Image 1 (cartoon, rainbow, N blue to C red):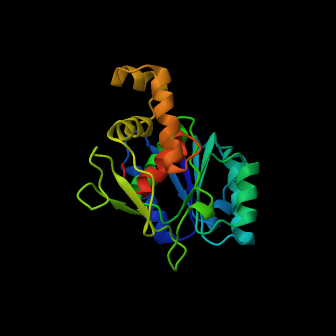
Image 2: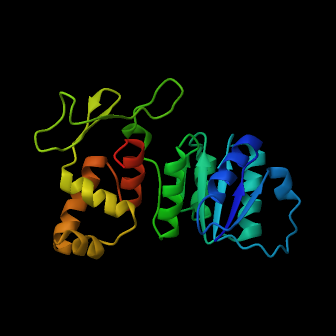
Image 3: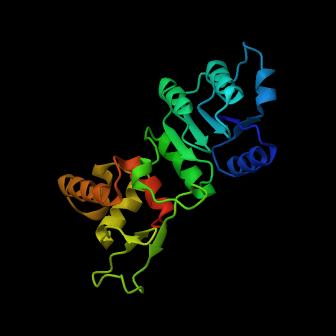
Length: 230
């Protein structure tokens, strides 16, 4: 798969390329700074199956490089790694039909999971700020409380705590379905795997989406990764 990575900070660019180079199937990874991107000829034969764009500050140079990257490589799918949810950057993503928009502070596992979801025709977007507790640096504060904690449940469900506030717990069945959803399985495939009907799978999925405050499969997986459920 051909991936074009645009990242102006050298240390981040090197780290991301090293991460991508280590994944089977990601055999053609092009990593460019903004300056290197500007030197790419307009008739380049590189077609990005995935564009991974790292946006530090949402300034003019970033927006200009963003527009140039989407124009040069005509990506099939694209993910934005952002530092702050700048309105101009969000608008540019919407116009370019980006499939993913995730924090730059995400773990390597979360980034790879977002890529896999997007390549499986899914989407990966963060929750609205009103639903996310933050620390003094603006980073999400998400802590998992396991079953050995006083908030653990007798049925084995795992309770989540967000900045000290207990969230809705997932049952073992819902956790099992969440893991299968995270692997990109369809509702029908999950039904066969678990020996239940598609209607039952959909019912469990709707409930776990509600518990995670997620809108779809991709977002539920993204949230679960950051809350330590996967």
